[in-house]
Each structure stands twice: as structure tokens, then as C-alpha cells.
Amino acid sequence: PRPKAPLAATCNGAMDAQNGAKIVYEFDTVTYLRRGALNILDAVAVQLPDVFIGEILPKLDLKDTLNLAQVSKAYRDAVWSVGGVQSMGAKFDAHKAH
Image 1 (cartoon, rainbow, N blue to C red):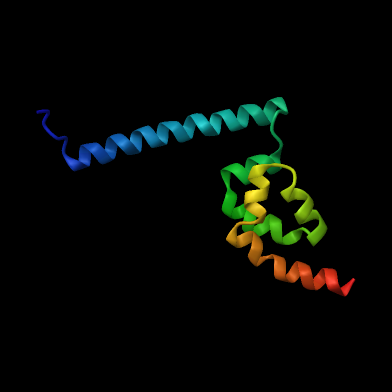
Image 2: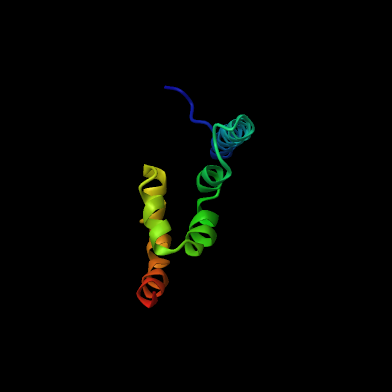
């Protein structure tokens, strides 16, 4: 049988692989942004989903939010996530007031 690696070595190896993948992913995102193949809203939604859900979604009105949910599966998932749904109450109230 193969000897088991110490826990610290296993964790460090996993962290190194994870950090390497993150660096490559961030590089790809910047490359796509520069080429115009990806817009800044997509980049924020993918790279910073908590910021997207907490800061951007609440600023959209009800109609814009529901339209955004139809754009892609990723936006649909963000709109109907826990944070996205929590921001809907104020949007419904504002919509009723109009």
C-alpha cells in the first residue's frame, strides 16, 4: 500500500492547485473583458456574486429584475437566489405604488 501523505502536505497541495486555478480563471476573465467577449456585469456576476446580489440587484426595479432573469441561467439563478428574492419585497411595494 501507498503511504499516506501528511495532512499538512495534502492541504497545501490542494490550496496550491486551487490558487493556481483561480489565477488562470482571473486571467481568462480579464482577457475576455479586453476582447469585448464578456461585459463588466457578467464579470461581476461571475467573479463577485455576493456583490452582484447584494449591491446591483437591489438597485434594479421589478421589471428590470425579471427581464434580467430571462437573459441567462446564471442571471436567473442570481435573481431567484435567497439574496435576490429578499430584495423583491421592496420592488413589489415600489411597483404597487406606481
